[in-house]
Length: 437
Image (tube, rainbow, N blue to C red; front, top):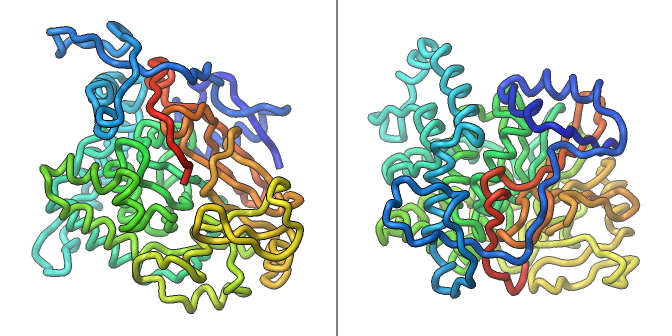
């Protein structure tokens, strides 16, 4: 296992599409105990608000900033500061224009082939054609899809997901990402650093929505990549891909706000959540899910027999897979199971980790679900690794994010990265969260 770093982010940004070549070059040239991407100073004390300037069209995010506390009511919606960030990023090529142009260029080069395929692309009624490339280009610019586009996207995605097993088999090489939580510009940063599909084979471990301000854009973007490249993108379900949870932690309110007090988009997207697979296995060795293991399940065959096409139950096997955590030293549990302080799922001991891996002839468990300050963390004698891909979680935690790369030889490399450049420079921070669900 290597923990690598590259001191100049430009070497990563220059070849977003040709990521495979980049990673091979980095593996050869980068040595030592380093981490990718420059470390940016962490600020844990400021909340930024725009200066009340009349000339809003010429607003620059780096100018006219003042500091003040925001009320709960103000931070419950996408305030003016976030709107200005969005406007500035779309006009700032350093952040996402490069990947948009590269993606568009690639699409145009394959335009004729795509048109031939697109003639056969219809929804279930067999009448409406679609262009996933157009949707992806819109979303890369942080533009919302129309309601009818979201509906069609969901229908297409369900047609793909319903044919996947509860436990998806994935070949190497693969890049594994943890929680995203609606932090759209950090998702762009992830793609800047990790590369775009189909050059990179991605496995996402769930929790695309809630907490951040751009859950709609985040989930729709990865969903469109799944539709475009179904064999190169795997989307697992997290505990936040739930109707009950999204009504509490922001996604429902975001859909209402962004779609003119209409909850239909939330209904479409949460219906899709019911079809997301629960787990994955990389090259018959690494077990992956959002939370952990369950006392109700011993084998992968038992996981595949579960009926997943429903809302996440409040207890039982599916709940455990999405909600459980590995027990740490502070939990004072060396064997067996323990009720989770979250109120759902369980804490599983190192002994139970080893038993599950031995029973299924696996080497380790890769999961997400927990904030880890360095972006990734090994536990249970290096048998369980937690990956978290939302840097500066909730805009105030100051944590790094990470990706796990598994190469053709099953060697694991970790890329750690900080917030998207604009937000890092603006040092934006939001309210405290009472409990990191």
